[in-house]
Amino acid sequence: MSTQARSYPAEYHDAADRTVGVPGSVASLSCEAALVPASPRSREAVLAQLMQGSNRLWRGRDLAAVTEPGCATGFTALDAQLPGAGWPAGALTELLITCPGVGEMQLLLPALARLARAGKHLLWVAPPQRPYAPALHQAGLDPAALVVVQTNRRQDLLWVAEQALRSATCAAVLLWPGAVSDAKPLQYAELRRLQLAAEGSRTLVFLFRPLAEALVSSCAALRLQLSGREDGRLELQILKRRGALSTTPLVLDLGREPLRKESIHHDLAGHPLAAPPGRINRRGEFIT
Image 1 (cartoon, rainbow, N blue to C red):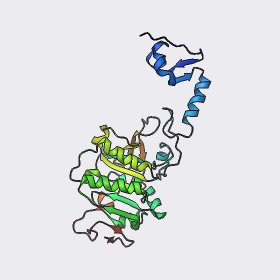
Image 2 (cartoon, one colour):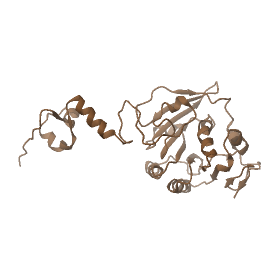
Image 3 (cartoon, rainbow, N blue to C red):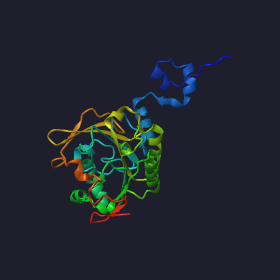
Image 4 (tube, rainbow, N blue to C red):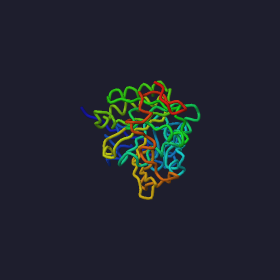
């Protein structure tokens, strides 16, 4: 059986030919759909048309275009580096930390406090310590907006998060998978389920992971490496975002000396907040 090579007008080239260096002949038979105009102006027009109204296609040198703005982080320098100028809504954000208490909660508090003031619910699943209501209130986050679920089971953590995302009842979901008993790295399929659940809502999803898991493949839209500095500031490296690669770390001033880990999360033992998980009222009491 013989195959006759097809030829195309001179103003077109085969995209696969240009990529792999195959002369435009037989290879063009399987790549007919990949034809793009050779003229730079025409190529720009086609690319612009493809990217118009899509947040899944962007130029590698630019930040991805978004259909809806992000949630401002409260840090101008960070907003300038994120597509949508803020935390991505309806997508996973991973915070990879060298150790707990480097400032990860202080990084999120401005956005969380703003959502709480708007009457939104905030879901925390398996936090390593019990949230300390007085410190949250002092930081401007109304504890009444907080919903805490304590679990030691990996499947329960994933189920609660997925149900909350699909119901779109919470403005933000924070997950600590490392706090459960079977704290092995989340599998790609598990992350994908969370991402798909998040895409149907405007919910912010924050996943706290150890820095060692930075090498594990992830479908998260945003991955940040966080580490504390001796001067009390937070060093932040964008490992992944929708858009151009970031090579320069950011140094953020949290506005004060870093709070100790126990000031936002309080140990369960011997404290008035050591009660069954549930809602927190305005007096810092848990409602089961």
